[in-house]
Length: 397
Image 1 (cartoon, rainbow, N blue to C red):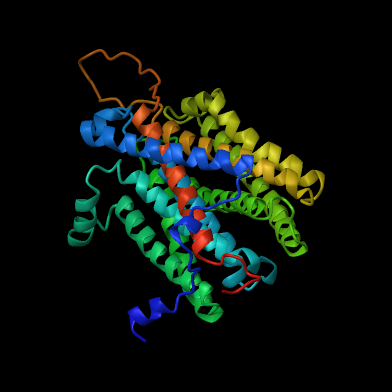
Image 2 (image 1 turned 120 degrees about the vertical axis):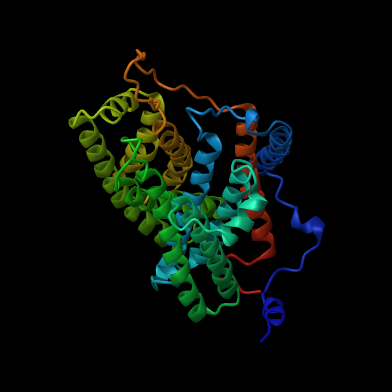
């Protein structure tokens, strides 16, 4: 079978353009539609400003070169890896209770990583030449080169796996999904390594982030699964979905417990040794409100809600998943910003140098618009996919 013939066998819903963008006119749906449209308009405006002014349109500087777009890119690719893990529970590892969400999770992983690529494309400067020279002159010692390459391979496997899921070819979906999961974990742990390799930034350097990224990806994937299934079933879940989500809620409680353990020991070890650039930065982080938003929305509130009813209050968990994703955003923003809090200094022998101050950064309007545009693109792509493809496990077209 040729590639053209294989593509022709992919099942999809034959609908008109009018039907493609039709939706139930409920207040919530109208609000989401207006938000998505406004975000896409913002994306176009932000890109236009960037194309006119370049990186001068952003709030970054030589002292703080990584800004909001890096954090949002990480937010999306973390979400993609997390959804890949959730989707793999059913079609790769054979847990039948989770088969019902496999197609939605895998499609969500594709949509979120595409959205991440769309955002980062306007941060790296020359995305076209990057693709060309990524092949012609690969930087094999560069963690960022490996990140881009591995994510490209991962996306390819995710697309192929999704096609096999649509064709109900579970045998091939299992094989392709396994390799997609492996490359996703490799790419994501390597993304953590981008921060772990920062020898000049003691607060980030070390083996913590490669494992932390995988853990928080799984947590993010479960949050998003509750959100997409909550909207799909309008919080009126079937018995099958209730069993699925209750199981995920209990897994989430375990993962958040491990996360609390990880973060607590990270802070303790950072402060205990008194190392300049690590202990003082850790203390500064503990005094920041953005860190405590992350702690409250991602760790404390979800743990209390899940353990109160042993994961059976699914409507409550849906709402704390929405707030949890806000906390996940701050988690990614804090990760990027906190690594750059303390400025690097030149070694001066004969000249007096003032003590460094904390670096302050706030995203520009262009950065905010492109970031919100990435979210709008993500919602739009998922909405179109839910119209074109059968993402439920209980029906075949």
